[in-house]
Image 1 (tube, rainbow, N blue to C red):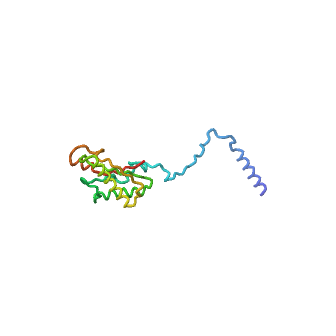
Image 2 (cartoon, rainbow, N blue to C red; image 1 turned 90 degrees about the vertical axis):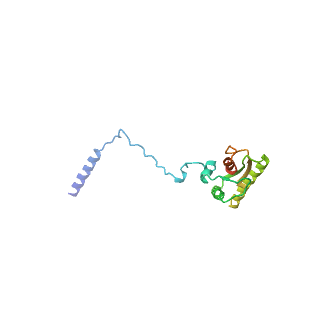
Image 3 (cartoon, one colour; image 1 turned 120 degrees about the vertical axis):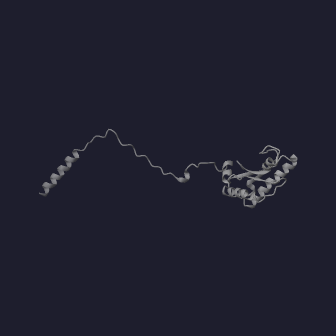
Length: 170
């Protein structure tokens, strides 16, 4: 009886296998696509690129200009937050170098204004160096009264032109 039952089961299994379709289907499923893992640090950054003036200005919250009183080149308490912000940016971004441009208003001789602009640029540089920025990363230049930002012969225009501007060197 065991042999008979085994034979019946064997014949039933063979019959069920014979009933399977042996031809390939008309449409094959698509090949599996490989999944790629994204590395969050490899994502292309958006916004300004490190080392550009735009990135610098954004990094210092627009505080890349300091202003001076008439015939002065001293760093006062109003300039300190801007220069501290610039120093922090430069210490975080070791590959960025800057030029400090010294500017004056239209009053005074060309020679006087070039010398005063140089003193203003150097005062800002010395302050940044005192905050830990290497002096080798800061260049200075004086434009005197040659590059005014505000035109006009009044106190408001003169105040805007008495400045030191930090510009990224590329």
